[in-house]
Image (cartoon, rainbow, N blue to C red):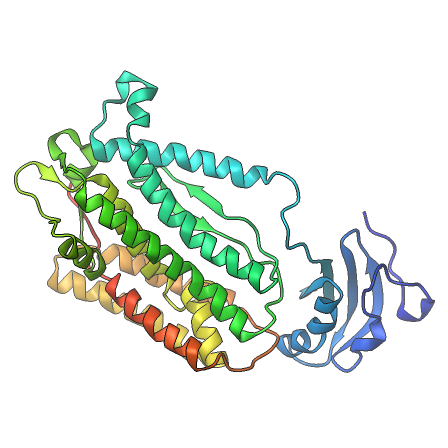
Length: 374
């Protein structure tokens, strides 16, 4: 429920510690204010472009416990201020429901990799728990990295939302939603890079455990018979260090826990693509500022080029995958990137971390990550 609009000169007092309309007159000329349950909506005319207005007025709102956004609707601009809430209020039922659903879909996916006979009931399904734990583990640790750094930098963000899908791995990953104004480039960098680095740590552990577990018989695995995974250098290197192999003769293949490591590496690479709201875009935006636009234009070209190469030289294996991601890159770039309030440089140490992350991302790449035989 909202109250009626009030003009700035009506003498009405805004709730809490919301900044007065006149305090932003240099960048946003307010002519009406509407109180809401979460804050207020300031209607007016921006005197600068959207990013400059946000940089100018967001610090005052943030200091007083509010986040802001600017929208254009029905012929007028509105600066929307909402109270910031960085703690978890009550039981996040949606997050819990999605997590439980993803546990179910990853168990079913794992049953396919293990060749479990589901006609034997629930106990047979639960026997696929190592696969489910490995996949959910790398995803959860990845998102935990983001969440921990949002709390460290006092940025409002949701708990992870897992995405259950009945595919070969049982999920499309997990996401967190940042609803806040990012205070500075350093915060954007830390939040963006934390997910891949945390996730890769889990990937290394899962892969190291997986390669030491006994292989499974392909004859009993409906999924392993039809899907061939291409392992990136990171996974191959871990197996070599552990003195284990990823290639088995006959009807035997790696333990499905290794697939969990593959998922971690693959998702890390995809998330490091510097476009839209992906982790790589947050890192690149923090490093390059507005010059990220040039990078975003090059990404779809590179992905479509890779797809073309695979068509010509690899019989089209994984070509559709990279062409699909080329289309997604075009779509994601339209959403724009995050604009931090403070554009100060991230510094030399974070640039060094960026180089390390880039190297790790390359180790997670393989041109043919998956092949499907019909």
